[in-house]
Image (cartoon, rainbow, N blue to C red; front, side, top):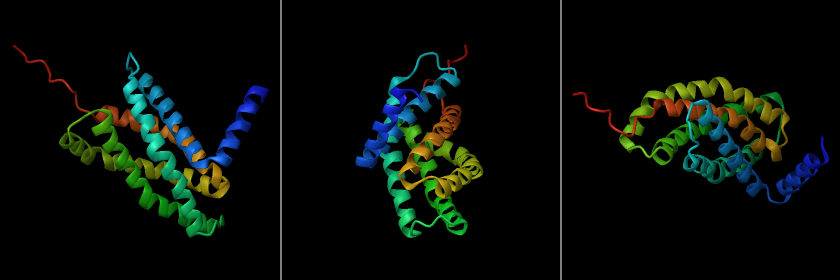
Length: 191
């Protein structure tokens, strides 16, 4: 590892140790922004929508980082920090039955109402159509991530690990949400 990268990592780890919540929130924001930038490019948007990127970063900073920080601490407190297979399975099941559905629903609402600026009724209709597919897909992907996270990743790195994985998941959700949005302008009338 180059000396610049090594020094950067050391400074990051020091920030994580001294200011864990802030560091995790900033990390989630940066990764959310990069994820959305990649999503926009993959979906063929010719010019980056900076407002959208900033709103996605706000979601990462204000919700994803802090929520993950406290959720992982709570799970370790509930299960007394145990990492045996039975306890990890319980953590994963609890996480998948509670936080996963809420996180995906909240993201879809935020994306539709705040990021895209859609009327609530349109967002609600689209969520009814798309949410079950998104959640079922989440349940085929995130339990494996949760298992790895709870079994092998130290507590202070769990939000960062899940944020890195969420980078890819965010691209999937962005592309899914983008495909489900309604056009803002009316179709031209035929003569």
